[in-house]
Image (tube, rainbow, N blue to C red; front, top):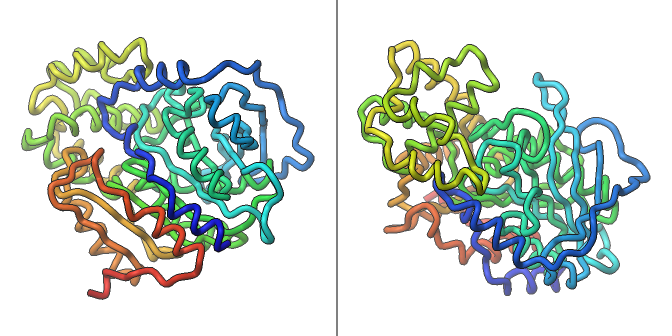
Length: 406
């Protein structure tokens, strides 16, 4: 593990927030990924000796011959998978994702695992990283971590890449997806070990945080060493009051639209007409899009939004949205392992005060948290230089700095 630790801490941290912005030009990223790949062949079904049952069991798996050439030349073992996630009280779901291990023989105890939770890419099925040859930019992260001796699991989240309804910014649902991606990886590649870390930014930051809280009881057979959350969407309830006051930032309006559309698909009782007015109502379909062919229309629709286009039309509607966002928030209880939380005080997507409050609550639960509140940083420019060192230290067994005790 010492060699792996040195290799990991030497890595240049890759930009993990590239997909977090609600108006990100996803189409351009997909096009870059396609251009970067030298086409190999058509994917082929993989036969899994023991697909398993229950959470992390495999519905289907296939090869990934069209990853970027530099990733394929590194000798990485790769599979695109559909796996089962059986959440308490929610029944069985099917979730897609991608899983990777380094080439060669695994170390004693198996490959250590990074479960990567991606940032916002959209809410439609076509918005999944697994639908892009570059994994929407995450292929470089895969190459870096596998070169350093880590297996990597990347969940698409339910409803992205496979049939289902995407629970946008539902940290709890995404947390289960992050954990079960680790189980799926170990089902496909049995030489992966049980020690793992969760790592994500923005939407993925909230997912990694939730996975940490859930891991101890939901996946006791796995050994979580820690989680990293960059600019996490921990608790977004404050969006409601800002929508009422007309003070949503230009980035928060489109984000709230995706939240509302996602909620309405999962709960017919939530009527989006109670939350949309003016140009938001007129351009709703355009605002919902995420695919390259709809990127221009969405960008234009965002520019037309008014200050109160997402204001709830009644106190009852506001209360219902607050309740829904509260149910999606973290923390909900003590974490299972140490956390690193890094965020900027100039974030225009997630108010720093919301993250401050979530951290205060988590500290009250007794969590061990390394807190990095960065002055002048926004959402996509959070400095993550400390991340790889922090992750490496957790795998090495070094105690984490606890800023809750200061």
